[in-house]
Image (cartoon, rainbow, N blue to C red):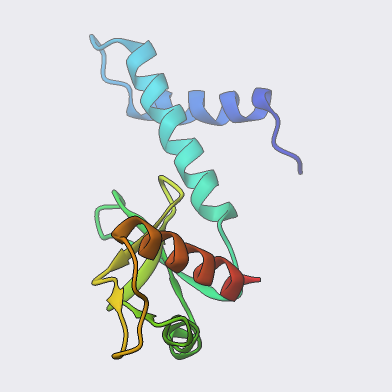
Length: 128
């Protein structure tokens, strides 16, 4: 079954009708249902064999972490950089690193934005 806008809106209307409280604005309820539906589709579509998906208990955050962390960290260290963890923020599409720094005495020697760019390039190459 292919999802088109008509079907998406029908699903969103069904969700909105269930959640709508009498006396409140239906357009606001429908807009919230539509946003939630698109977020669910985006998360479900974000699948990659080298990533594992994590969703917070309240459903507010969704991240994708490397499944083969040692292979990823080895690739980072070969470029003279290291980090505590790395993930893709599925909701924004941004690649984020925790504790990104140079690795070893002969590690990367450059500006912070160049370090971030190098880390993104290593992650992208590792994913392919």
